[in-house]
Image: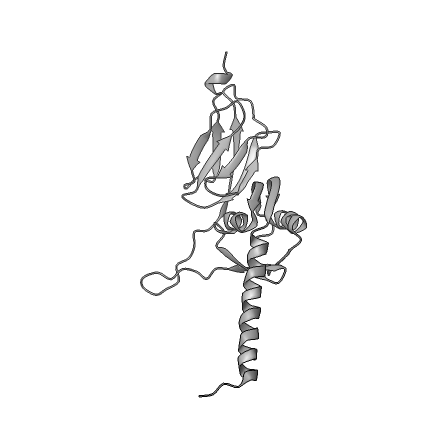
Length: 201
């Protein structure tokens, strides 16, 4: 079967275009990002990333929860790695198209019986953090272990964070021992932090 010269060049141009698109997408994901955003709404975080990398994000309203807050700390981190840290726990996938990063909800996992397995639901976990003297602690970092999701306590030691059953909440503050607790049936927690030994005396 003979292939005309025109068909050959058309095929070659399509391959070249596809390859160029992948290379451009890889270049975007290889960009370095430095951010320090404690307890910010995820849309605010995306705006900051877009401003520092000169790319845009495209998504529908049902992909991101409006008031969901995360903590993002990155020091010259590769954009692709940062996006994986942010979106992995949220079951959101992304694709680079031109200079836009398109966000999509991953399809629900299918269990062995073939029915859809619902992902564990996020729910608000609230509480207060106090010191050994019973006084509320301000500015305590509250994060979900292994993710960038977090918040900080307010003037009354109060915090609120969206988490799901089985998540590990990590409480940390300068001068205090790190405290960890697993999310269970309780939706309201009372946490007491103990001063670090090297801070005593």
